[in-house]
Amino acid sequence: MKRNSWSSGLSVTADGVGVISHAGTIAPRLLADRVGLTGELSQAIARRNFVPVHDRGRVLTDLAVTLIDGGEAIADIGVLRHQSEALGPVASAPTVWRTLDEVTAGKRRKIQTARARTRRHVWAQIPGGIPASPCAGRDLGDTVVLDVDATIVVTHSEKEHAAPTYKRTFGYHPIGVWCDSTDEFLAASLRPGNAGSNTAADHIDVLAQAIAQIPAAHRRDVLIRSDGAGASHDLLNWVTEQNRVRGRRVEYSVGFSITGPMRRAIATCPEAAWGPALNPGGDLRDGAEVAELTGLLRPEWLERWPDGMRVIIRRERPHPGAQLSIFEEIDGWRYQAFVTNTATGQLQFLEARHRAHARVEDRIRHAKDTGLGRLPSREFAVNQAWLVAVMLAADLVAWTRMLACTGDAAVLALCEPKALRYRLWHVAARLTRSGRRRRVKIPETWPWATAIAAVFATIAAIPKPA
Image (cartoon, rainbow, N blue to C red; front, side, top):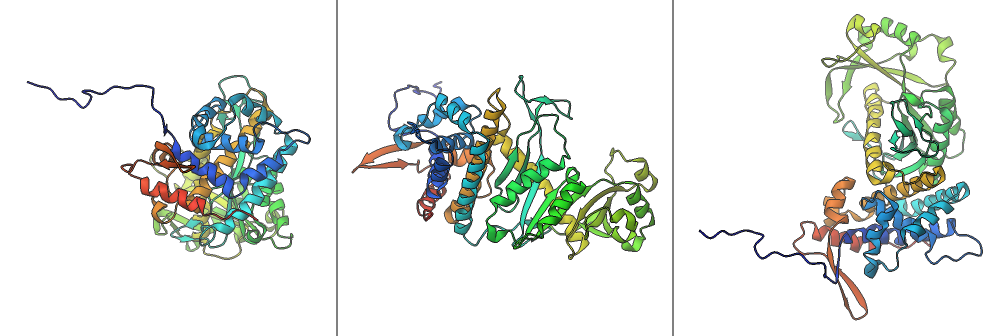
């Protein structure tokens, strides 16, 4: 009997020409040029009386594109060098090393300014304005939501300032701020592994950087969310002081530890004060209730905190196997608290708004999948510069989604980084030349070919900043 096999007559050779892989990464590189990011970075890190072979702004942009593409090491810039027929000259790995080494503390501040200028132009180009943050089946309108959180980056070798972490691992403990409305990675600080989770100075530093990244017209309505690590007098006082700045209104929603005064208030809280909690979709959640404790707390305790601070508590029947505190074992409820200075709104909605802070975990996971999970150098300064490239990569992905993944390309708008690589960034293409023009031809049988062509057409039409 004759056997047929799909591999019959199949051979593999290494002599193909006119073909490029990972052709989709041309899109974020082109976007960086169109919105002015590459030019802004070039000015930010330029050195007087020094004209490099490879423009340093271009090198930083290419490194960010490499991270978007899934690169984990500086040597992975070689994937872009493979596409030199389409991209032009691309820096080598040693040049990338030198560029990162040139990004000093002063240069990082200039890069922040360059990113803020570019962001102002990008937000002005978003169709319909920046997206609203979803919450309990509704949205927060024009409110710009900033989520601050820290994470552990494990290192497997001795690196400068790496230290044991509170999770009994070894590495770094960076803290960052993400914009929930747009998925942008606004600000970050690389810290030793033994840095505290609730260090107010670190929270204030990254939040100040993040607010500076927001275009001035959008600073009139800002919400800062944090878990219990942000529950400090210094941080809440600092947020309160921001409301004295002209043209700025900042609210907070911060997790809070349940202390003795709060336990006494819970014990005296009447049953009539409890109302049903909401699920993320906006429907009622069985077995969960919300109440406000502000009026039940002693005035002398409240006076130690900023004026206008409200204390809101959630209780829920624990899932099987959950560990309860001695206080919780008395009535069998599990309690969680947060504080806010938002004066109006239903308790259920405010509580659901605070719980939406959990989305920051997805942002952290995406950042670790786009360079943050592996820091390349033994030198702390180089790793700080690498973190800058991680933020640039996250911004370029977010801008691609908001500006280009519309219309025929809307199917790509909700893709996570890995899905974007599978569908968009890693697509192969054929490069042809005709009449002094180069054409990148996506295979017509690729399931997302129409969407990819729409992405490139939209990016090409973006007006350059004045």
